[in-house]
Image 1: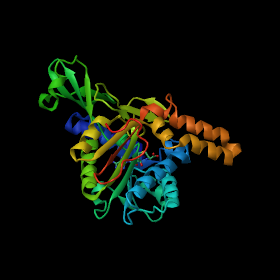
Image 2: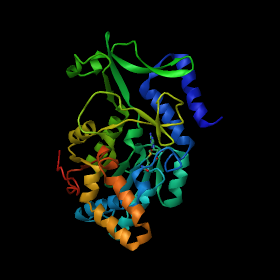
Image 3: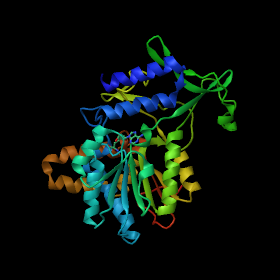
Image 4: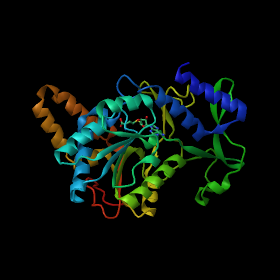
Length: 354
Ligand code: SAH
């Protein structure tokens, strides 16, 4: 049976057996099956990510990391960690750039998808793979990169009803999955400032992201280093659902055929920044991706590449546009870094520290 059928099947059986399940559980099961079953990235997949658009993206991240590493005094022993490295393209471009500066860290990939692990292994023979962040080494500073990783982690939602706040649950209505308010009261999990919001208001959070980020921040505080998070998201807490599903580059309902579409939600950078600060890390950004890439020199890099390969000048210009323009990935995508106390201030954050 194809994986896609089995996600819908597993979810249907579970709901028939146990009753409605929390939205976060639904997303977790659907996405685990989705990523395990195929490589969804690229023009012939469901979505395209920045490193697949142009080598410039990974290269600039590699230069950004090298700069930090050099200013830290070029420590011999340091680990490059990537969360959800996809096809391994970002890491390949970043490592090539880092090598030019003599920066050659040990490579660790946190990845659960067997299909994507195989793709990563084709480009990175000496990497170590981890099913979770718990097995990452504890002996040296970590340089952690996460591009479009946190958006794939489950969110949960609370919805305001006449009877008070309720958790969003997923139920079955005939053969369809639907979101309904749960029956249990959860007032104590919703902050007081949410009192009085109109019925139907949705509050979203990602306990999975918070827990993971909390652990990583703790590691950085202890071991030293930096984390770079790039994703679509928001800087201030807000209301409303940001859950979305994409299949064949088109939006579909998150409740249609789970396991066959990419379920994501916007990343709450405000919450990640607060977690970092409680661990006494310095937070830089979030900046808009376009501004950050420009501050790192993407305009000059694009010009240079086009001069070297005039036949590709058009596609280089198009990639530059896609990565930086406000109507493309330039504004929706945010870049945030958190550094441990004794690491230098990273480049590119035109907005300065938040
Ligand atoms: N960073 C890559 C891929 C983004 S897609 C790029 O920019 O191209 C999301 C990635 O996260 C995939 O590699 C997926 O397999 C991985 N992933 C999703 N959920 C995960 C989880 N819970 N643990 C580890 N990896 C996960």
